[in-house]
Image (tube, rainbow, N blue to C red; front, side, top):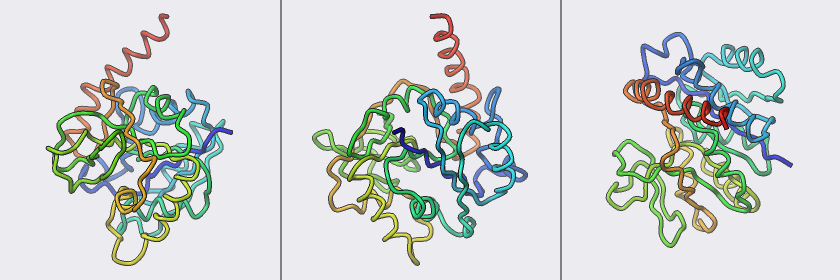
Length: 250
């Protein structure tokens, strides 16, 4: 059975204003389609049709758009009612209260090549994080890897000691998914409202099975700032369209 996909799309995206004054970030146009379209197309290519989407800011716009554009998908919407005062740890906890089992994870602000999901798909009984191996900036979510396993993850890490950036797309499967789920639900409590979901991964005492999947060279970007949006439009989308064109010509 194909795993479901959990997409976090609840945030206000204050850092992207004024672009997000009248719409959520996942509905921003990036090339010929919206951010979320690139994700649904990647899921479709991998045969994933079950989606659990966490919404909050302008939730009705997201729901209406997805229902209108993707009627062949089975999409359930879960609300994070405290979307203005909590972060992705709490959004994911809302999804995982309703879901047990394997799942793809993605932040709704990532534009990425469908081949990234294909690289993650074979993973069994582990946590598989798409990692772009590069010199990271302080703001990026970084991973520290030892003997092939991720031993630390977060923005707080020293870039000099890190393997690269976690791009916000992952797969969690088997017993690891269940252990991770328990960690998220335990940590989504008062005092941790502004933690990112990676906090739960970093907090796990037993990280065995947490693996960095190298996606270096495949076009992708997580859109956190206006300059990321510009990079998505000017650099990532042309590469995605070129790759799609090359596949059609084969």
